[in-house]
Length: 233
Image (tube, rainbow, N blue to C red; front, side, top):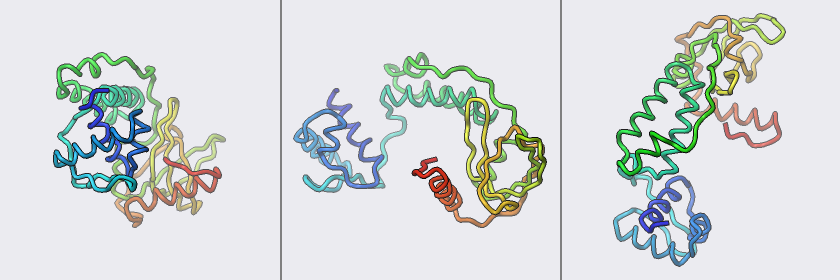
């Protein structure tokens, strides 16, 4: 690994962590010696990168630090393009269009020497036909962000129809279906609804009142208790 790439990777390792990282941990990930990491961090600090900490205790990057946009490694470019390909083939129409735009933007702004990683990646997502939804997924995503309720008419796998008011939490994207996790006012618990089984939906102005992120955390705890393990969705 070139030294410039190694310095960049050290910054990336520190950026993605919310705790102090020791030189030994960084060295293990980069497959270099701790002495090399100490020297590299000293050089980064000398270049005004706001790294705090010291040898033996660990290092942390100041939250205010920001790198120039789209300083991406080849692997990061391929990861972004592969993810965007998957979304373009399986996302709702709005997300699919955004994914295609993202690939075009990456291709246009990365340096010329890296452009082939975006335009001719070595990886590809398997083509798929997006599931047929009974609810507008783009509006559902907006309702999640805005904390608004949705009234749905739903038909379960046995054909039983119910009407419910739900507080949408998150949409799960799978190859053959999409699943909407939500708090159900009827059942007074979290439930999961296949979007292709929604018969009709009314997007309400009413807000459920939960603070941003609170409903998601409650749902994650529910999933952890239900499945007996931590859940990172």
